[in-house]
Image (cartoon, rainbow, N blue to C red; front, side, top):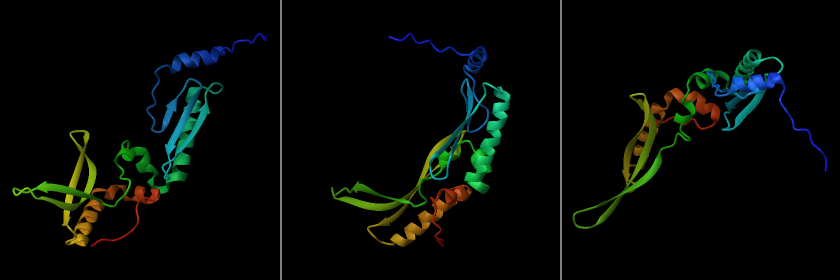
Length: 183
């Protein structure tokens, strides 16, 4: 049986670990661990870019400056003109729709005679800030049982584009937006 020496941290690493405990980052897409500053950026293809900058040798301040520099460089490369919106809009990814197509739902209702009728609708869903909180909103567009389906779709699509107009450049970059004009 071999006698293994237990690994111990250097005094500098021990000091950094003590300093790190409970440390939060005020910089978007940057977090801290006791031995490095981590960068994690959402990518346009719904992936994640992860890197870290060590801070044992250089210190946390230099590592943080380097991490911010790398974050901005990589973010600009990944997102192009959309980078400032991605960086400065904290709840952006929570608000983005997965598609700009309205969904179809069917609602059933029972008449006084006992007959059950179904009606098809296009539904547009989005989130709005109300009193500092995100509240889900929706709007229905009836197209009955095929009557005037194109008109209902056009109206729903127009509302979908309107409520997401500020996000269109980001959605285009992510490939979630196909350009079809609806009048």
